[in-house]
Amino acid sequence: MSDNTASRRTFLAAPLALQAVPPASSSPSSSITTKVLGRTGLQVTTVGFGTMITSDASVIERAVDLGINYFDTARTYQSGNCERMVGAALKTHRKSLILSTKTGKEDKDGALQDLETSLKELQTDFVDIWYIHAKSRSAQLTEERLEAQRIAKQRGMIRFSGVSTHAGFDDIIPAAIQSGAIDVILTSYNFTMGAAIDPLIVSAKKAGLGVVAMKVMAGGFRRVKPGDPLYPTFKKDGVFPAALRWALRNPNIDTTIPSITDHDQLDENFRCMGAPFSSSDSKLLAEQRDYIRPLYCRACGACTGVCPKGLPIPEILRHVMYAEGYGQFAMAREHYLELPQAVRDVRCQDCETCAVHCPNQVAVAQRLMRAQELLA
Ligand code: SF4
Ligand code: SF4
Image (cartoon, rainbow, N blue to C red; front, side, top):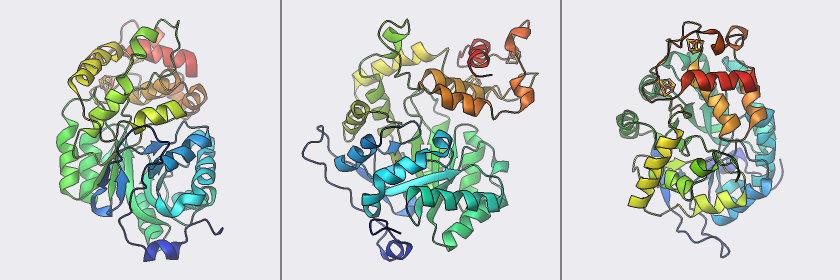
C-alpha cells in the first residue's frame, strides 16, 4: 500500500463524521452544503460525483479541490476501467473522501472477488459504501448477496452496505429497510417521477437509512449539438441545474451523484449546492417534462410483464437513454448485449400493434425500435 492510501486500521480508528473541505479560492461561486448520510454518520456534500461516464480524471481531481467529498463508481463501469481512473484521481485524498462502488455478482464468492478487484483498482483498503448493483425486486436481495456484505464488513473491506435501484421502488426499498442489513439506498430520483416514491424515501429515512439520488437529470441529453433538431428542446439553458436543485430541495435526499464528464458540468453542478429551487426552475422543468415525455422512461413499473414477447421495457429504455441522452453508445450497447438472446431477437416492428400503453406517454414501441436499431 502506498503512503497516500488510507489503511484499514486508520479508518477504523477515525471518527465517523468527516468534515467537508472548504472550497478552493478558484472555485465557482457556491456554498458547500453537507448532510449526514443516515445511520452511517458520514457527512456528505449534497452534490456528489457520479463517475459512470467520466473519462477525464482531471474533472474528478478538480471536484476534490472544490470540496466535493462523495464519489461513486462501480466494478462494471466503463468495462471495468472506471475504478482504475477513480483510484488514480483520488488516491492522494482518500482519507478525506467518501467512496462507494458496486457489484452485480449474484454469488457470495463472486461478489467478494469483485470487491477485492475494486479495492485494488481504487488503490484503497476499503470503500465506505458497497452497493448491491441495480436491483428492482425484493427477491434479488438474496442471502448470498447480504452475506457477502456482512463478510466484507467483518473483514474491514467496507464500512457500510447499500443497494442501488432504477425501478421497482415499492418492492425493493421496503425490502431493503426490512432486511435490517442495508445502510444506504441509491435510487433514481428526478422531476419526472410522480409522488409515489416520496413516502418510500421518507420511510427509508425514518428507518435510519441514508438516501442517495441518481439519474437526477432525467436522461441528460446534454450531448445534443446545435443544429440537431433536438437541440432547441434538450439544451435549454438552465434545465440541468434546475433538475439538480429540484432533487436537492427534498430534505430526505442526503446527497446526489449526477454524472459529470467535463469541467463546465462540474462548475454547473457545484453552483447548485446551497442554491434555492425557484419558480423559474419549476417552469423550466415543466417544459422539459413535456419535451422528454415520449423519450424518457421514469421506470414506474406499470408496463412490467405486459409485452407478450417478454421485453424488459424499462431496462431497454434505460440502455437507449444511455446512448441518446448520455451520449454513451458503447456503454449502451454493452449493457444491451447482456440481455438474454431471446430478448435481443425480438423486433417490435414485427408486431401489428403494441400491447403496451405507457401511462406516462412514453412512445414505447418507437423507443424500443430505436434501441433495436442502434444496439441489437
Ligand atoms: S415505459 Fe412507461 S409504463 Fe413502462 S416503466 Fe417506463 S414510464 Fe412506466
Ligand atoms: S411492439 Fe410492443 S408488444 Fe410488440 S414486442 Fe414491442 S413492446 Fe412487445
